[in-house]
Image (cartoon, rainbow, N blue to C red; front, side):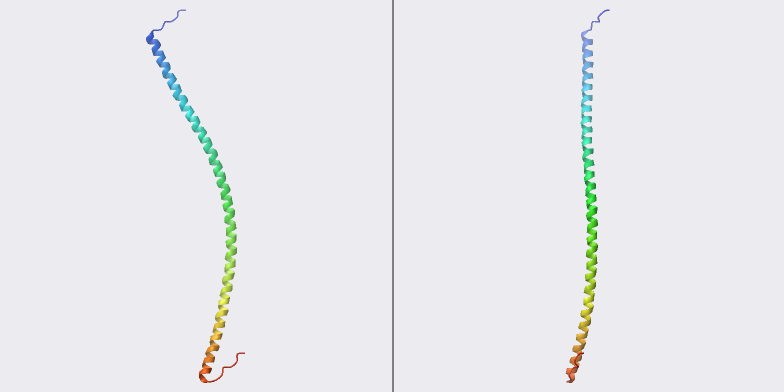
Length: 123
């Protein structure tokens, strides 16, 4: 078997081809490393998003419970305010009735005084 003797030009050409292949392989490796880092970032972001979603769910559950308690308290306050309003309206009616009766007694007394007579004692 005969050894092939290369020319300088052929060896240089093969070397340049080999260098291009190494450069392409390195760019591919750099791209693969960047893709792997991006994938790791995506995994971490997904984990953080899941944790945030879980926290948001817990907050929503607490907010719902708080809203239900607030609604219950509001109902109780509303009922108490309604009772207070009823009491105030009743007191207004009583006060107005009393004021009307006293005014009428005064008017009777004033008429009697103008006539020079005594007003009858209220029974």
